[in-house]
Length: 143
Image (cartoon, rainbow, N blue to C red; front, top):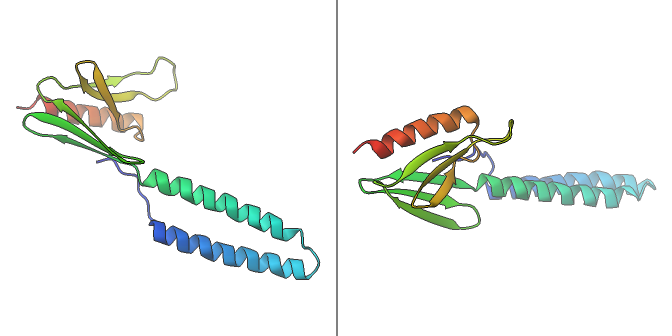
């Protein structure tokens, strides 16, 4: 399974965000009381941007893929907005590492058969993709 290393749960991220709101608006209120009232809207904008960033990072950390090689099938389960399952017959499944047409672009690791393919390991670097491709080819080929 390829899963990003995320140290904050949604609850922890919310606690952090609320704490930052309290600190930011506490400081901004102090400046506003001294006459620099324009600090308040910028503090609000800053907290909106922080909230959006925490949301995006939290969503990306919730993505994962699981590749299972069974006796008769290769199954790929991926979660992003929902859970999606792909199943290929092991006898026909092919693992292909597609090199990019443009230098500097990432390669694609595909598992598929009969004209259908699913990309796996999109978050891996080139060395990890090559290693995963080697391991998957061995697992699929081994009877």
